[in-house]
Amino acid sequence: WTLSDAQGATLGEFEQADEVLEVLASDVAAQVLTLLGRDAVAPIETAPRLALVIAPIIGAPGNGRVALARAMAGTLEWRGMALATEPGDNTLLILGTVVMSDAEPGVQRIEVVWEVLKPDGQRLGVINQANTLPAGTLDGEWGAIAAAIADGGATGVLYLLEKIGL
Image 1 (tube, rainbow, N blue to C red):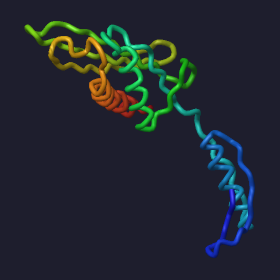
Image 2 (image 1 turned 135 degrees about the horizontal axis):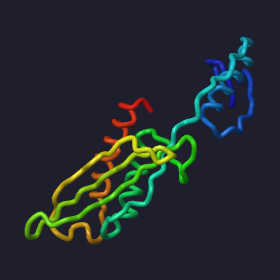
Image 3 (image 1 turned 30 degrees about the vertical axis):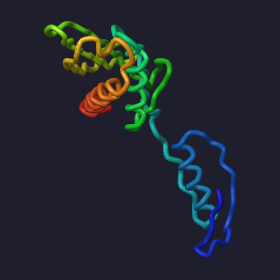
Image 4 (image 1 turned 120 degrees about the horizontal axis):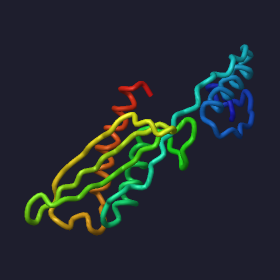
């Protein structure tokens, strides 16, 4: 880090190697205040950040198991949620289940159920999505359909988390 005045002259420099954003921001603020000759403030204490674990998708045909899990993880991360690879004390588990059924000749109904669980298995809520597609549409690559489903599912997950105060 380099602190410069308006003319570009260096007022001070220091190195920072921390990877945790909250610690980084707090440390940088203290260093800048010190370089400016002001009293450093106490570091900000924050609660451990909640992270989400996306479990493998159950029941999805074609490449849906991978495509839908990847799309949901990417969408939640893009919307600011932290992700984890394994459950832990500060994680919630997102379970996705796909159920396919025949709606009428040549048309399939897809239902996606997202469950949000605490680490101890307690269910916090369920998000349901359903639609119809031409039969066989999801037998191969899901492509943009996975992204659309994940977008709707992520909206539901974030609404649920907000509603219960997490």
